Image 1: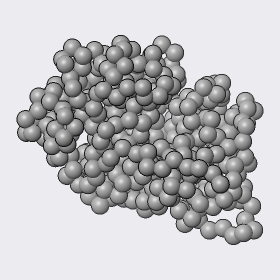
Image 2 (image 1 turned 120 degrees about the vertical axis):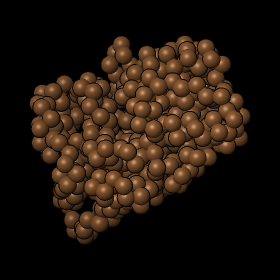
Image 3 (image 1 turned 135 degrees about the vertical axis):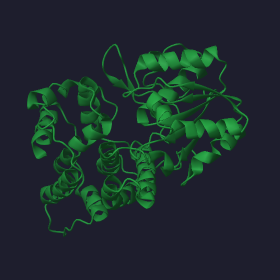
Image 4 (image 1 turned 180 degrees about the vertical axis):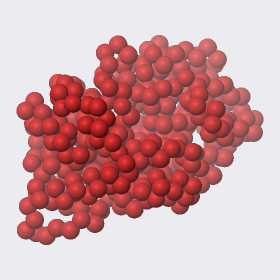
Amino acid sequence: MSVYMWNTFCPTLFGTGASRETGAQAKKLGMHKVMVCTEKALCDFGVATQVIDALQQAGLEVLVFDKCKADAPSNICDEGAAFAREHGIDGIVAVGGGSTLDTAKAIGIIISQNGTSIRDYYGIGEDAHEMKLITLSTTSGTGSEISQWAVIGDVETGAKEMPVYKPDLAIVDPVLTYSLPAGSTAATGLDVLAHCVEAITNRNYNPYGYIFGKEGIRLTMKWLPVAVKEPNNAEAREKMSLAANLGGMAISACGCQIGHSFSQTFGAHHHIPHGLGCAWGLPGVMVFTAKYGECSNLEEVADAMNVSYSAETDPMQLAERLVKCVTDLMRELDIKSLKDSGFTLEDCLASTEQFFHDGAFGNTPGIPGEKEIQEYIAYTYHAY
């Protein structure tokens, strides 16, 4: 009988208005001088300021580091750590999308290890945890608020690296997602779907993770179109915030697979949004799993998507039904294809070698080599 690791997630405070508790929660963690790690635009639009106000109202001293950018560039991580050290910060509150939360994790790593650069800690487990970290996501996508993984864009190599630092508390408040534009809502929501599907279909079976993945799929299929078309629909925003958190739990238990490898390698070279890359990579995940993985895993996904099958259904037939379900959703959400975005098949194939260096690739079913990767990429390019 196999042995599984459960309950590996950080504590989470969830619900509409939960961000108002940030100050009280920071004090419980022993914070006094807090660094708010965020993006300038989130301050300008009054999103991060809601959290800053909550911290100040609790009597905490707040300093704002608002230089976070997409892909969590390694030099920004290093700059943030220098900022924290210069100002004697004793706690970090991160407010933003996945890249901002990952930047904050990187800062925590550097400070806790008494280092100067995140480049020294790629792929290393958490040896010290001296800097307390609270994460608040402003998108319903990455699940980074509860994940131990930080996806960092190395500015020298162009690769995406994955050091480890687990938040001490995640606060998930759907209110912080209300101003997210339709396109970003769609892309980050499809990242949720990719997390859940890839967690279920990779080689790391974990029944606990499958529970979260299936519910995340079900919620996303029902509520993502509503959140995109009705951005002020509070119920849709709350359901997608929950789905994103469940997706984070699913990948914490099981990991991702080849779809994320595509997004993280191709995306690193072309600087496309992570969720969009995951959307493009997702249809091929179904077909790849039908070829090299377990049909029972595809059946789990089909159950969650309400796609019919029988005991006689061939794995590839089931994969094609799931691909149609996903691509129909992408069309409904007005997701542009790779071709419509101006990319050629050769552009996509150029990232083949980088798959072998991607953190998610080791979870992929089978023993894929260059030929299998290129077949996957070609399918991905033409599938949507």
